[in-house]
Length: 399
Ligand code: CTP
Image (cartoon, rainbow, N blue to C red):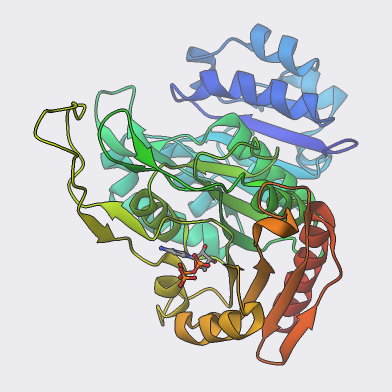
């Protein structure tokens, strides 16, 4: 996926630097060559020896190291890579980048480079939310710097919130997308997949037979065309593909929150088989057999994620695609669904048991758009995914 690519990796001085060691390994496993640069502060968190052992290359640490200057000047060093990746990008490094400071090797390289730059911020939540950091972030985005993360969660400093560095595989996915030369390069796509599980009590749930196979194939096909894919998946049988950002959820409501958090995006593809209903009041403890009779479950309607995103007005992805799994009157029902949900396309399929499509390897779909219904011949789910991904690339190219 990254073979033949060279990444200049600038490691900032934050506790997340320990994750960067794994990141180096992951990048190299995928064929990338990594030239590491440590800031002075980063050297307090990880040692040059461990970084160079993992990278299999010399570590650059100081602007005024004459030996380095003799071997490779800092200007040249800043330009040998296909991508300059800053991980972790501390508040201090982001501020230096935003203001064009060049007081040490890392900031000098960042100012001198003419290759694309990506940052993976990591810092305390208050520092991240501080207006100064947010101002710097806006400046950097305006300068064309790609930003991956940060994630929300428990932090090493004991607080909770956004500020954790993205996981190594999420960063690898963003790097893969940034270095792709496919037609979806630079495009961000949010994709739902798999079933949802709606709890009845701590051990039981309501689910459906979706395996997640079609959604997973679409994620891989979009990735192969260079898209940055946010793959929001319920508990599927098929494992998620490599090189996409996976957000694992259980219930429809969690899926909705994850989708909204992943926006803005250029396209939203809703391949999940979302449960239409959930149990209104799941029990905190396991329901027991009683002599009094059978339990009665009261249902509540789940949010319709596709309809909500398709009708959201400002912030709506340019292309919104829904799926319709039908057993009768496939085209009529799917055409009506496109209208009622407000999406651009519906990928309709016949899931009557006789077709063997649900849980099978093949699919026969009809693509319903504003131009009418287009039948695709029965083909493998991977082939359907490739065809759909290239149609998405065409459509986004026109928008
Ligand atoms: N969908 C969604 N959120 C829901 C239900 C469905 O995002 N709560 C999306 C699915 O991912 C799919 C599309 O809506 O892209 C169609 O879902 P489907 O279950 O076929 O249609 P329903 O809206 O449930 O209508 P019906 O049950 O009448 O067929």
